[in-house]
Image 1 (cartoon, protein in one colour):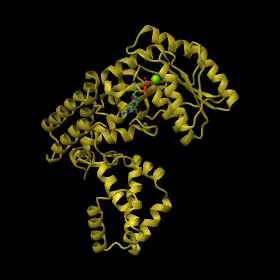
Image 2 (spheres, rainbow, N blue to C red):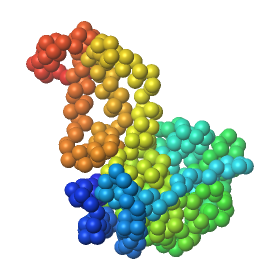
Image 3 (cartoon, rainbow, N blue to C red):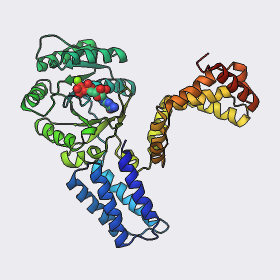
Image 4 (spheres, helix red, strand yellow):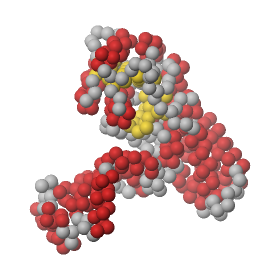
Length: 408
Ligand SMILES: Nc1nc2c(ncn2[C@@H]2O[C@H](COP(=O)(O)OP(=O)(O)O)[C@@H](O)[C@H]2O)c(=O)[nH]1
Ligand SMILES: [Mg+2]
C-alpha cells in the first residue's frame, strides 16, 4: 500500500534531516520533491498544488519550537495538512433509527462491489453486532448472483434473490424480506458497467428512489487512480453518496485516489479493501492513513489486529514463560503461529513504524515461514520441550535427512 509514495516521501524527509536548519532554499527543495512524489502517485494536479501551498504556509509561518528538529516540523506540517485533505474527520456508515439500515452499493464493473458487500456484511455482524441480509440485485450478469450466494454461504449470511424482477423491485422485495427474516441491515449489490453511462446511472437512481437507502456507498478501484476519482464525481452528481469504499489498496496502487478523493468529490472514504479475502476490509482512519503514507507506520492498527487475533491470556502466558526461562520450542511455535495470524509478514511489517521501506526491500517469503512452522510441527513433543541447541540441531538434521518437514 502506497509503497512508492511512502518511499519517496521518506527519502525527502531524510534529506531534510541532514540539514541543520530549514532555510527558504531547502524548504523549496523539500516541497519540490514532495510535489513530485504526489504527482507520481497520481494525485490530482490541482490538489497537489493547493496541498503543497498549504504545507509551505505552515512550515514557513509556523513558530520554531525549541528542541524539535526542523525536519520534524516539516513532517508534522505535512501530516497535519494530509489529515485536513483526506478528512479531517472520520466518517462512518449511518444506522437507521427505525427499521433496517439499508446500504446501497454502487460502482463500475470489476470495482469490487460484490466482494465488498460480503466483507461489509461480515464486518457489520462481527464488529457491530448487526444481522445483515445481502440482496443480489445485479441481474445483468447471471454469474453475479451466484457469486454473492457463494460468498453468503461462506460467511453464513443469507442472500435474497428472485428471478425475473427488475433491480428496483428486487431491492424493494429484499428490504421487505429483511423485515420478516429479522435482519436489521440490508446490503444491496447492484450491477456495474465498464464505463459510467446513462443506463447505469438510471438504474441505481431508480433503486435509490424506490428503497430510500440509509447509506449510498460508492465502491471504487484504487488501482484506476484518477479515473476512480473522475467516476466518483459522476456518481456523486446522480446519487447522494454517503462515502466511498476504496478497494485494492493492497495492489500496486500508487495511492493517488486515496489522497485526492475527498478534495475533488467532497466525499469521505469509509473503508478500504486491502485484499481478496473476506476479512481484508479496514475501517478508514484518516490520522492513521496519513501516518502510513508518511511511513510512520500504523501502530494502532497493528495493535488492534493483534488484539483480535491473539488473546491477552496467550500473550501473558508466553511472557511469564519467557521470564521464568521455561520458554520452549513449543512455545516458540505458538508465538510463530500467533504472529502469522496477523496476516502475511510483509503486511505486518508495513504497519510497523519505520518498517514500510524494509517490508518493500526485503524479500519475505511466507513459504519459508510455512516451512519453519512445518519443521517445528514435525518434531516430537520431547524435542520441542528441550530447547538445547544440540537437540535442536539434531532434530533439524534428522528432518533434513528424512526430507520430511510436513506436519506430524
Ligand atoms: N486485491 C484485491 N482484490 C479485490 C479487492 N476487492 C475486490 N477484489 C477483486 O476484484 C475482482 C472484482 O470483484 P467483484 O466483487 O466481482 O467486483 P464487482 O464487479 O464490482 O462486483 C475480484 O477478483 C475480487 O476478488 C481488494 O480489496 N483487493
Ligand atoms: Mg458484482
